[in-house]
Amino acid sequence: MVCRECEFEKPKADVEVEKIREGAIERETLILYGDMDTLPRTKAECPKCGHNEAAYVIRQTRAADEPSTRIYRCAKCMYTWREF
Figure 1 (cartoon, helix red, strand yellow):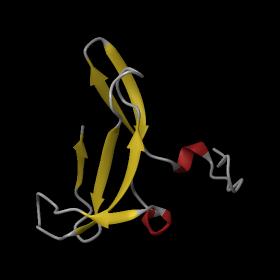
Figure 2 (cartoon, one colour; figure 1 turned 120 degrees about the vertical axis):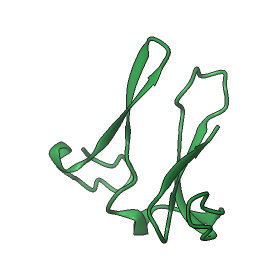
Figure 3 (cartoon, rainbow, N blue to C red; figure 1 turned 180 degrees about the horizontal axis):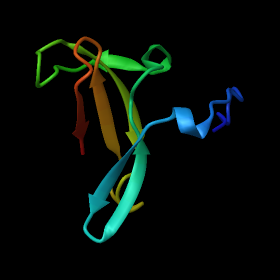
């Protein structure tokens, strides 16, 4: 896998993916593990531990005419949740 902006390379075998089923469609999305220090952070309360900082990525998980999904990962306990 290669970043389109900085050309950082990482073998695909080192990247973990999560399968998401939406009706009859199954998709894969990157899991937010490992290189969290390069992801943007925001103030967001973790539903599991209550910590107020999380890294996030934005993915288009539905049709193009619907809003994107923001996927958060708590900076303290590493819990992952989504905001549609």
